[in-house]
Length: 177
Image (cartoon, rainbow, N blue to C red; front, side, top):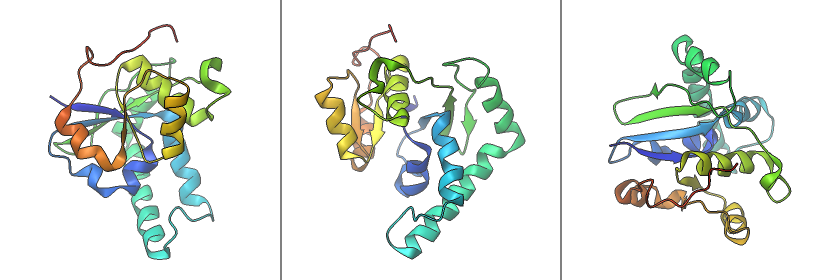
């Protein structure tokens, strides 16, 4: 059974260990996080502090963009974008990794406390009953402070999250988004 996680697309490019899990994984990406990849690749601002690491991550971002722009994958993504909260068919990277793109829609429920990307991440997690993966401690702290009922794992605990797994019954969620 595949483990599912909501995550930003750039984290998949940044953290190589995410692409070699011990079990099959489905990364659920709000579409807006894919659009961020284009800005990061084209931007003059470094993604990483070290110039060599920055060049490597920007190359990985380019590879991920190329994967999403593959005509077969692009068609699946375009279908998902036809309706709010529609999920794409799985985009298979390899036998262990697949991506599901979600046409997440920001709403005012958490908009004052979280930025638009964070809001889409947490709403996607809530709506689909899928845990979040994040490397941003401030975001994780804000989730706790706001008492948002989502399961969140630090990116460094990825392998633990894959091994532990989570079922919908374990995940407390609300459906009135």
